[in-house]
Length: 230
Image 1 (cartoon, helix red, strand yellow):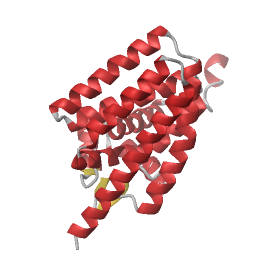
Image 2 (cartoon, helix red, strand yellow):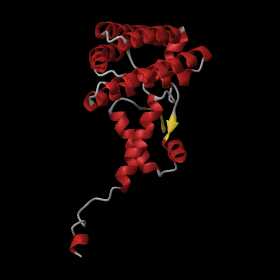
Image 3 (cartoon, helix red, strand yellow):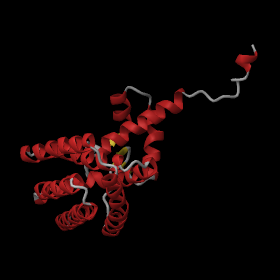
Image 4 (tube, one colour):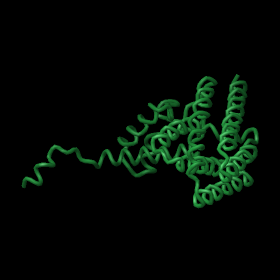
């Protein structure tokens, strides 16, 4: 009996595990481009889709709201927040510092398997752009960048970048408005070639160009949307 009583004070894992799984699924939806700015979801719709009770969904949403990844749109509806110019500028500066560190580390740790996988994702991104598939492009764009960042070999750095991308990734839907996906793919190909060739400086320059040009287009799109709303 002693073997049983020693576990009496241990908190059951089921609820916490379920909350973690729901949180991860919501993160995946955001990072894979499934929730665009202006779109809204509800606790009830998420709970039904995931076949869970509303409680773990509410808890997961609260965590994402604390990170700035989700916000209350109206009433019971939740969506990704509209970012202002200051927030975008801050994200641009932080991304430029942190993500370029990751790409430099990835270049140092590159191997044939990594290069082959990165090229495969690049082809998927180019195919999505050519077909005009927005969500598929955003998903492939995420896969491309995070294939690089995982190769950096730092779980802590990957977690930091992941939290940043929860805020910026939905905004990539706005890049289509100016036909930026094609431009972005040219930058991605230069980034891939620099990594393949072991040129850290060129890889950092290509990534900074990708980050900066996306920022400029997103900012312009937001200003246009504000003007249209009067």
